[in-house]
Length: 281
Image (tube, rainbow, N blue to C red; front, side, top):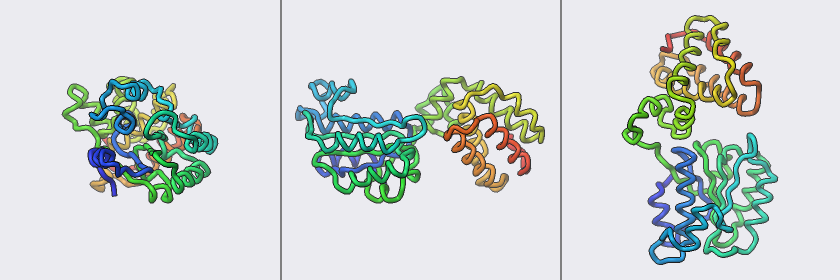
């Protein structure tokens, strides 16, 4: 069962913090900020924690605290070499803080050997060490790690907080990570990509997908994520086959694994045309 971040902070203040945490939901940036806030609370040297002004707080905020370690995917995964390197840091003496904080970003990209190596740390944690796995969907983490971690859920931001960016919020389905990528490329451009793909599917004219290219890998992923949000309600209502979403997820996974993104999107379009059905638009 997941708890919210406020309950976690209360546990930290009362010195009841679990040593192995799984942060999931919201966006990567929001979860990252929460980990840094936790690091500030645990390592601040003042009574009023976190003060934001002491040496420890300033080091955490600048990314230079020797007891805060961050692991990110290399290309498409978090590999066993990275976890072995983290093990070497985890079992050393803490340098200057009260707690050592280890954050693994996009933890759903841990390879199986890396996850198993991490499991050994989770089972025999060093004293005053907190390990945080961060990902959008905790279900992407293997069961043996999930069962040993305290899950902390971060809800998506309210639509009202987006102000003039409500179109971006709606196309992203409230996913802050996707919303930021859409904002980077421009909402009208992304709408155009999705519209051209939908037009090809509804017309049954596969050749229309050629109009989408040249597109980069990241741009294809944005189309797929935005398309999934667009048709999700139609699938739930029974107006479109669930296979539409299944094929989108499968294609996204292939593209993330470095399969040729143009070929993957063209194959998806052929599958969607074959499925046919209700108009998407």
